[in-house]
Length: 150
Image (cartoon, rainbow, N blue to C red; front, top):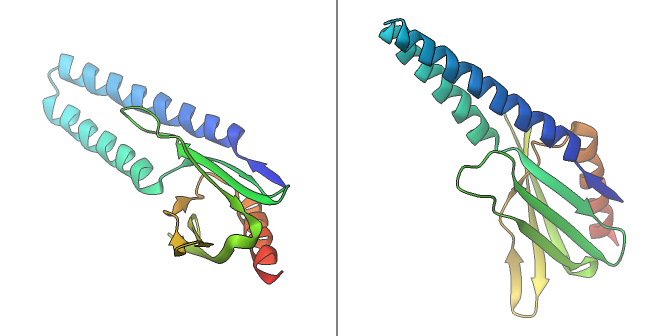
């Protein structure tokens, strides 16, 4: 099974930048019209807008468990300063635990994978699944839980 969220990520990115441009143009117009206090309010709105996307941590996700390996590729959708591409790849038999941490009333989900290595147990950094729809998150959870049962 392979799960990608390319379309949703593209939509999220377009919405973020479109609304950001609208807010910036509105602030510029307010500054030019000498409505400095309202322009500063617009700066507060933009800050809240950016903070929401920072906390939500939307990421491009590609999950695959088709072969004998589990592959998880991800990167942040909204990032200033370049993209940090990450990939997690390991044989299925090494998976030991899976943690799904839900927050914000189940809208935001973080995935943590724990595997067995030659030196002991290793825990990968948490990956935000907020960019996936609920059904895809559920499919990943079912897939990983079924691998753990075997």
